[in-house]
Length: 192
Ligand SMILES: [Cu+2]
Image (tube, rainbow, N blue to C red; front, side):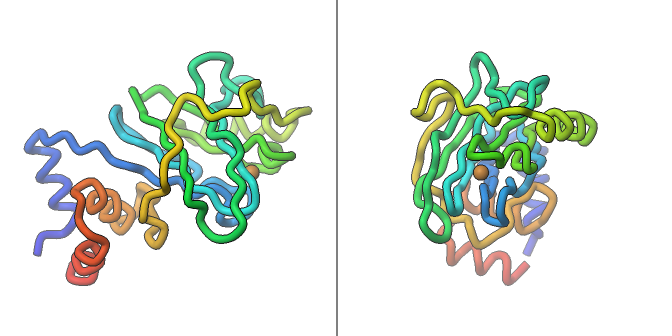
């Protein structure tokens, strides 16, 4: 059977619009976003899924560590989770290729390295690292409610690694967007 990658390439070359849902795991390995660097095209959805104990994701100001973007940002609100992957996720639709930095506004998580970028690069991430490490405060937006995205039921993709640089991650994304059942997806992965 054709590999998942060849199917993706065929679809892309046929001009089929295939918006992807890209999963970012929040707090699964401590104060981390995984993947930390996300590449997303216009129309793609970045879905933040939450692990214990109580994290958030905030769109940050690129020039001020651990500080919310003043306008047109996003915030998930705090997402307390007792155990495992939380049922509630936060989705942000990407409208272009402009870089975003995001961070967790809980306690000193941002200062401790809990941030990441959408459509960023290593240089920008390193620059943000110094700003975050030196930030005197870790700020949440004024609003305690979520904004700039959608609070949704978390997608059923927690068993695969959805980082954008692996075949399996890509397969999970495509299977989900094609509406395949998980069993069919698993079979496709096993057979490929
Ligand atoms: Cu956190």
